[in-house]
Image (cartoon, rainbow, N blue to C red; front, side, top):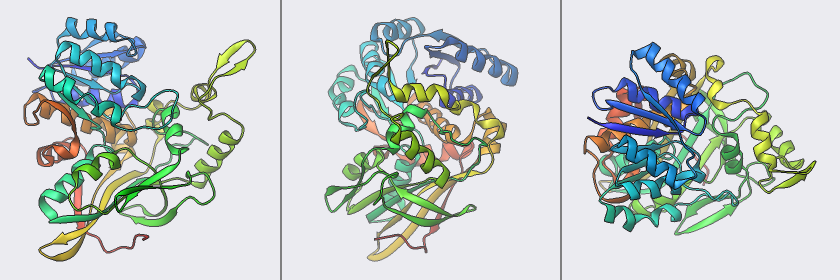
Length: 405
């Protein structure tokens, strides 16, 4: 019997748990754990109502390795799916090493006191996972995750050499709130307010954050959505892709932001509410960004009234049989259809479905190995086939548009 432990009961945790419940042939026994057990119980109740399946729930503090180890030893899963906060990645990895259980996450580790996310902390676990004889799959969401698989697919099937990659992430949905983030507000705001980096000719080049003068942006015509202003942003998958894609000369990541979103974010930063250091208020220590998170809408609750689509994909330029080729691989996800399937908005859906798919491939030993792996190091074909069957179809077309130099 295959057992999976899912840690984290937010918007993505809801999707992962429901998609695992739908794939009953592989995920026979599911335990959902979180610091807030009420969230787990709510998801378990809906799974019972929708699919007639019972899943287990548990309370755990994912910052505390002994608690994690005790839970894993008690439940004895074959894999742990980590959809908790990125701050907790290393604690969960430590617990998996201690218990000899495979590990999978959707976002790389980030120190609480430094809003710079990078893979060096998790790559340092390579020998630990090898010695334990287990596998860690890093960044198995959409971006990172599916975008990495698109790159691996392009390298395997479409090009002899890939020279440039542009990852383009568009959310053209409307949730009805003046300002909201599509995943954890704290993590989202830390991500989009940091200095931007992209990789070119063997080095990282810095440009201003998206809310500052001098930020780099252009208008891209997205399939089924149309023109949207797209801003250069640093994203973690670039760090691993520069290591594993042969012949790569440049890689960039672009994300769409509305003027309303950027205006709100500028104001919040100007008044200090995006700060991550402690301030004293009436004798209490408060982190402004954590306080702001409490005030903003819960991303897990946005789905019901969310309309519109996300379009996420990669534009490639490279050589095939001595000729320059350009290809575009992308997915379109409808917020309303995602809600019909698992009562979640598309941003949670596009992260949760790939996490389930990656875990399934590890359990089936289609993906196997010992050590720490990024998605592009693994066979993309079964992964992309599986996400297409579970609600995320993808498309490959010739690219004929224009990108900035």
